[in-house]
Image (tube, helix red, strand yellow):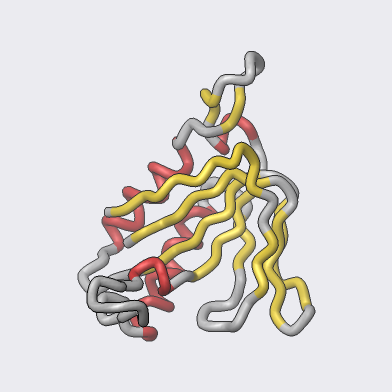
Length: 144
């Protein structure tokens, strides 16, 4: 499981010019799954995301988590996080989890996050336009 975390201001995801998820301030997460990923790994990464100290404290130091700082999460399914270009310029996606399992784990991932914070999402497998106001810019790759 890979999650690309971006600290964000106003961000949104749209499908066919219709906004399906948006946040004002918080984190944008790109989430990808590979064969063998488990619910335990989801729970581990959710805790890591929620306690990742990448928001500024009163002195401007990145010392607060999203739970301390406030805000919400925009979660986007992103199978291309497992793209492999070792054998050429055309990415291979053989490491990507099959769609049926990935949809289930993505749903579980978002439900686990929702126990603690507001979560907006895109639509799994859809051709989406994602507009991100990356602050910092702060971008961190988490993997389990």
